[in-house]
Every structure is written in C-alpha cells, then in structure tokens.
Image 1: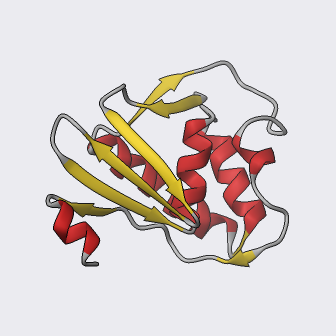
Image 2 (image 1 turned 45 degrees about the vertical axis):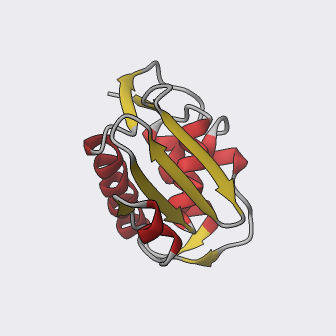
Amino acid sequence: MVERVRVANTSILHEAIEDEVLVINVETATYFRLSDAGAAVWRAVEENATVDEIVEGVVRRYQGAREAIEQAVRGLLAELSAEALIVLEPAPAPALASGGASAMASVQLPFFPPRLEKFVDLTQLMSS
C-alpha cells in the first residue's frame, strides 16, 4: 500500500532555518529539531510526498546503502508519527519523479541517520 505523508494539523508549526527544521507542537508545547537528512525528510513531508518518494529523494541526495537509508527514513517517519507531528494516509501510487524525490539536490552528501531531537523547554532548545 502506498502511503502519503502530511503534517498532522494546524497545531504543528514548522520553519526551515538553513539545514535544520524546527517543529513545534503548539498543543503540547514541545519543540523538535531535525537536521541534514531529517530536514530533507521534513521538506518532503511539507510537499505531501509518499513514503516511497521520500526514501527515493534521500537515496538520491545522500551516499550510503539504500537499505540503511530506507530503514532510517522509515524509522524517522514512525517517530514523527508517534509524536503526532505527521499523518500517513493511503494514497494512489504516484510516479516517483514527482513530489519529494525531485525536490532534493543531485549532489550526494554523506548520510548520517536522521535524528529527531525533542525539547520540552524552549531554553533547552536554545542552549543545545
């Protein structure tokens, strides 16, 4: 089954700053930070890409074994979903050339598994 990913709701605020994305769940007053590959994943989420498109985009952008990258991306998506930041919905199968996969750069960068950093206090976020 093909799944499309979207930002969960209007209570989730997000802003890209250079190679990072800051996400705030207004309802829980929880702050999150994604960088590098994690930020690339979030940008694809903003475009309502499918899981396969997101994986393909990260594989194109970063150097590494496809299986390891796919596992890391799917793990991050599961974590984002568990934090109620994103929603995965059934979707018709799209062409891989659209959405998140085409939006990512063609220069391959070293791949480091994406990490969702969680902060319950703004001062904690600012001091890290």
